[in-house]
Length: 202
Image 1: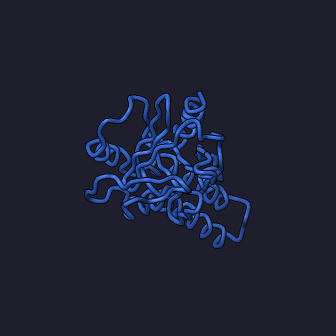
Image 2: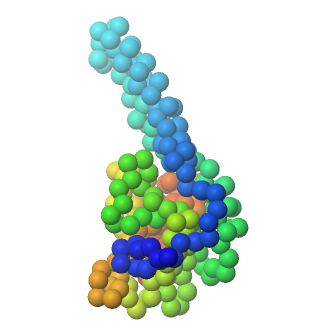
Image 3: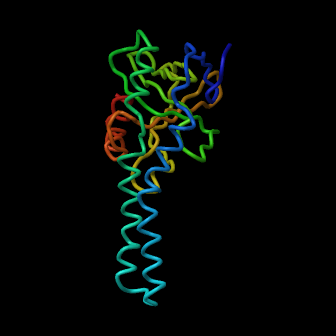
């Protein structure tokens, strides 16, 4: 059975218990909100009771977006290491040059998390490939037309971006978007995205 990412034919990887579960997607976004929400609520209460907008209440309220940013940065990759270990056991024979990433097709809309699949982006002298929980695919280097950055939901808060691998397959455009999940933080992975883009181009 074959699946399609863009117009790139892909075969599903070996089956096993789900790794990229709804629980992991939700908790990675819920925990930062739970940390930030009390500051916002308390700040609003203080402003309401004091009748003053400028004052201690506003100072407490201002902590909320900072706490949210820090929470997303540090907790957005909930159980990332466990997912990587599981997929490493299921994936054999990959080239030495590889990175653990989240991936998505251009048509995917993730209301909870931008990553449609998780797995390993790899490369050799002839092709670039992705081996994930849902998909496995290879894109010949000669078919690639561009490797560039594209924005995703993490870009809005300065914590991430897609590395977009674009190609022409059988005369039709195809695109695979990946975002590193190697580092412990989203900020660390954003920095790594430039390294990966440059390595893929090279």
